[in-house]
Amino acid sequence: MNDTRFIPVVETFHSLQGEGHHAGRSAFFIRLAGCHVGCPWCDTKHSWPMANHTQLDVEALAAEAHQAGDAGAAFVVITGGEPLHHNLQPLTNALSYACALPLHLETSGVDFLSGRFDWVTLSPKRHHPPKREVLTRCDELKVVVLDVEDLAFAMALANDTSTTAQLLLQPVWDNKIAQAITVHYVKQHPRWRLSLQSHKWLGVR
Image 1 (cartoon, rainbow, N blue to C red):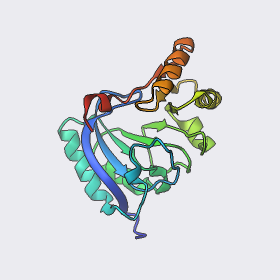
Image 2 (cartoon, rainbow, N blue to C red):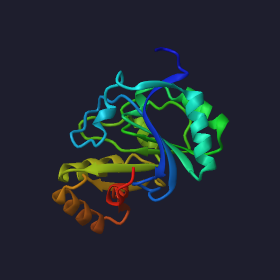
Image 3 (tube, helix red, strand yellow):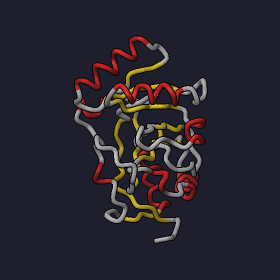
Image 4 (tube, rainbow, N blue to C red):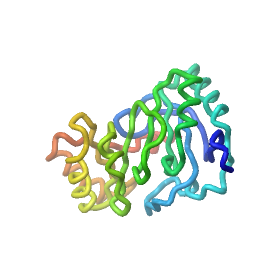
């Protein structure tokens, strides 16, 4: 379907942001389908195939976001999958018109930016580095850590971010070695912060 009013959606839900700089805040999530980055530790692999998910009208998604705002959501998160595989301009236009909530993007940065966002979380992957455009624009650099090579990757990318960008390291879930090396690194590098997937600890979406 080529109509830009429609976009493939895995799910929408109102919950708490579980990780990163805005962890613990009420948020409405729009999870888009489609991802070819292929991270082996990904916890949403069901979102990878684009054809398996329903194409939804961006106006209907914006109406959902408006209702979530009335119910207490502080911002909208567009995530995936990899949301930048799609042209996000029609979606962010609809969201901006329908509700006054800030728009957040969570991306690996493998595609060029589209749409208008108040906050960009870049979670880059060593095996598929991000576009420089996304790296220099991001408000938050959140690197998932599996081994020490990911720490070197994070440090190199941080040199090209804005001086105001938040720097976070997030160990792969339930990996004791990743947790240990990440904690050790953050203790020695005060500009970096530890990010944990608190929604998993709490058992919420």
